[in-house]
Length: 383
Image (cartoon, rainbow, N blue to C red):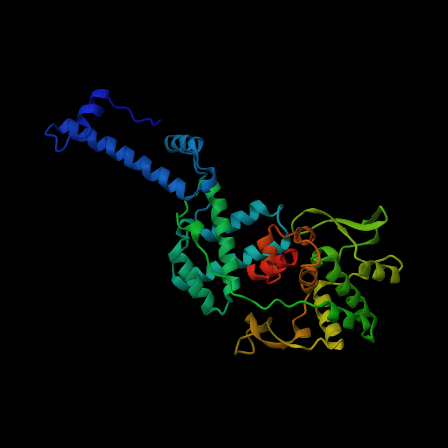
């Protein structure tokens, strides 16, 4: 039901009259048609901004009610995109990790440069196909990779959706904006390579410490922000099985993960203790050295951060793709990816997803570089 009221006589006899000579009838036709057109436009706009799964009779009734009784927009909430990201960070600072806040601020500063480049302020409502094209153009000019652009556009859409919940108008095109992901070479350490790393004679204690963390990470499947916090008190034994319980720093999920025999082997060597904690910067540096000493020197195509500036006094750090020796591409993330890749096909995928914490199977398969074809080949084992 709408709030539009007309007489039965008007609706039956006069509303569809063509070219009435009576000015009152003509004015009433214009009034009714204009109000119906405005209502239709509002409903269709809301429809385009809503998940189709929740469209039903109740949704329509609620939408019509909002048309006549709109929520008042808080004038203190910014409508500019850069300002809204700052507002978003302020509101979410206690809910997200410091790393996420840093990521959000990086995008904010990039959009500030984008505004200066094009000489115009970007509003939340401006995030549409035209904005996407400008964003791609600017990022390519600054030598950002396609996957970085794709990831950051996804976060910009997240900011816009949050703004929409606060009554800020968004463009109907916003939800459909997408950039195709670029295929990348997924670097991981195979079981054979891990065996070589274990057997290598290392000359320094700090490298042995880093090696143990690297081996642990490849059998635990966790991020460095989690495994570098592990300690003996987190381990418990149930039915003779060793489990470690912790809260993931990024997702805040409470996790209980079984310890692989390789993990127990390292702990036993260290009297039940985990290796000595080190900073992520030192860890990344040391495990490269460990892998280099272990002859992990296969030539592979990959991306590594490097200074692309021609001016020695200016640093422009970007991911540069070329052929490297594999040890040079090793970083803290390789443990989680190695776990997921090495055990894929050996352990049911839903168990692996539980350990890695991916939110869906498609995200997990993309993470380890598996396609639908790989999935089909795995399925043939059961035929």
